[in-house]
Amino acid sequence: MHRHRQLSIFAVVFIDLLGFGLILPLLPYYAETFDASSTVVGLLIASYSAAQLIGAPLLGRLSDRFGRRPVLMASIFGTLIGFLMLGFANSLLILFASRLLDGLTGGNISVARAYIADITDEDNRARGMGLIGAAFGLGFVIGPAAGGMLSAGERYALPAFVAAGLAVFNLIAVYLWLPESLDAARRAELRASGRGSFSRASLRDALARPGVGAILKMSFLYGLGFATFEGVFSLYAQKHLDLASDQTGYLLAYVGVLVAFIQGGAIGRLSRRFREERLILSAAAILVPSLLAWAYAPNVLAVMVILAPIALSLGVLSATIHSVLTKAVQQEEVGGVLGLSSALGSTTRIIGPLTGAALLDVLGTWAPGVLSAGLMVVLWWYARRIFVTQSHLAPAVYLEGEQTPV
Image 1: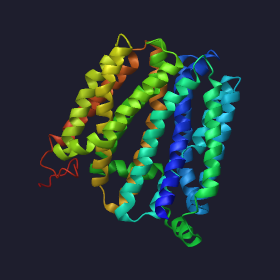
Image 2: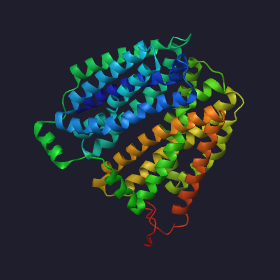
Image 3: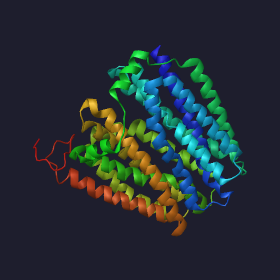
Image 4: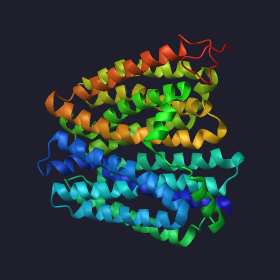
C-alpha cells in the first residue's frame, strides 16, 4: 500500500514540476511582448520565489492542522488558476499576479516531503525522499524542452494552458488515488509540537552556532551564485546568444540532464573517493573560471561545453553542502535545519535574479557571470578558512572557533 502511495506522490511532484518547467524558458520572451526591461523580467522571476518563501512554510503548517491531502489539492488548484491567468494575461500586472499566486500555492513540495515522512519508517525514508528528488529532476528536464517546443512561433500562452491542463489532471489524481496520511490524533500532536516553525529568531540562533552557522553561510553563498546564474539564463540566451524560446528550452533541458546525471550517480562515487571539504573547495574553484567563461562565451557551442563543468560543480556543491549540514546537528534537529536552509535558498532566488537582471540591463550580458564567479571566490575563501585552517577539527562537524582535537 505504501509503495502505491509513494508512486502517487512521485506523480504529483513530477506533474507539478513539469508544469513549472514548461513556463520557465518563455517568461522573458512573454514579458518582452509587454515591453518589459531585463530588470523587470528579473523582478518577475524573483516574485515567484518571494511568494514561495511565504507560502511554503504556511502550507506546511496548514497540512499539519488540516491534513496533507486537502492542502495538496488546494495548492494545486491555486497553481491551476495561476497558469490560466498567465495564459490569458494581457498586461505585465497580470503576469506578476499569476507568478505571485503560483508561488504562494506552489510550495507544496514541502507538503509532499511531509507526506513521505508520514508513510515511511526511518529505514526507508531516504529512499522515499529520493523519489521526490527524482520527480523534481525529471520534471525539470522534460518541462523546459517541452515548453520550448510549445512556444515556438511566439505562442507564449500555449505552454501556460498545457500546464493548466496538467494541473487539472494532478488535481483529479490526488482526489482519486492519494489517501490522507495523517489521522486526527497525529494532527493534534503536530500542532502541539510546533514542528516546522520558522522565524527570524530561529535563523539567528542557528547562525550563531559555529558549525551550523558556517555551513549555512556556505549554503547562502552557493545559492546566491546559482540563483544569479539560473535566474538570468533565459535572458542571457535571448540577448547574448539571440536564441528563441524553444532553443532556450532545449538548452535548459541540457543543463537539467547534466545536473540529474551528477545528482543521480556521479556524486555517490565522488563522495566515496574524496572528503566532503575537498569536494566543496574543488567545486567552488572550478566554478570561478567556468562562470567567467560563460559570461564571455562567443556562441552556443561554447556555452554547451562550458555548461558541463558548471553543472558538475553546482551538483556537487548542492549535494555535499546539504550532506555536511545534516552531519553538523543532532538527528532530531535535521528537519529544522534543512528548513532553515530551504528558507535561505528561497531568499537567494529572490536576490539573485533581481541583481543579475539589473546588472545585465545596465552593464551587459557578461555581468551576471562575473558576479556569480566573484561569489564563488568568496565561497572558496570562506570554506578554505573553515576546512583547511581548522583541519584539526572533526571533519563531520567543522565547528568554527572550537579547539577540540580529533
